[in-house]
Image (cartoon, rainbow, N blue to C red; front, side, top):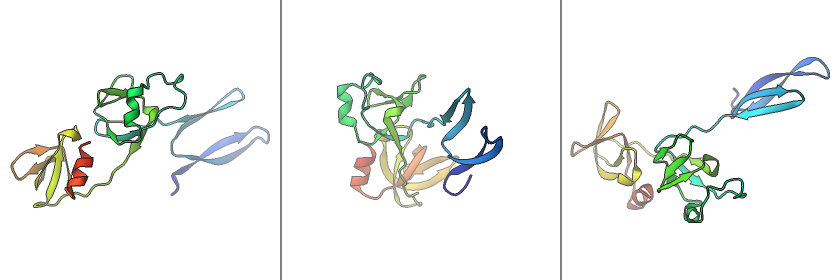
Length: 166
């Protein structure tokens, strides 16, 4: 794979019987040739509880009938995945979201240092709290009151905390 996230693939040019190369995006899983068709399979995005996403209403509601009017209030807002059902739909805010409607959001947060204020939470960011950071042991973050959680980030402002728990 090169620096631009591309990888080199080989293919046979049937008109000239020569082997040639093309570059494809790293999101391509496989390329198949079926009779006269070229089939490009893309890697599916992996989702897990705790991931953040922004939903977008599908343009063709006949193709995606699961979108309901009451979902419109969440369009364009950052939402956290609470769980994923067997069909692969994301569950959050008592609604199921088709992953094709959702763009994963990556948020960079600073790691806290012992003695700094931090935001602590496990799987559900809505149940987060702030306390003084007291270190990490066995992949758990400890607050100064002895409580431990799976996650902790540096507390930067009240606005950051309010946005974080939405």
